[in-house]
Length: 134
Image (cartoon, rainbow, N blue to C red):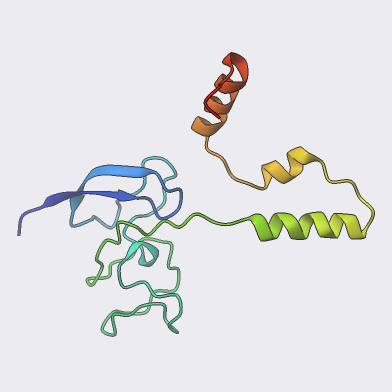
């Protein structure tokens, strides 16, 4: 059986990973965040609504779905990444602060939303040189 290459998104950080060779080694990891790629959470059979979170009934139970494993039924889900929506958590934090009469700084609310180093650098460049495209 020959190997082939694939482009996917990391399930954890969303970084596009190009030309990965299949089948994945158990030791394959994201070049950006070092997340294990041969993990349940990045498999097509991953189904968090099921009791063992796997739709493959012949697969052995894996306790930590985000860590590398030896599952023989692993099939890469190239779209395993889903951006987290932190709006509810930010609103809850602001409501809690208001309940206790505390002021919530704008930068505290912004820090609850994750941004990559590249996004921060791009924002700084736009701030320095101006950006009329927005």
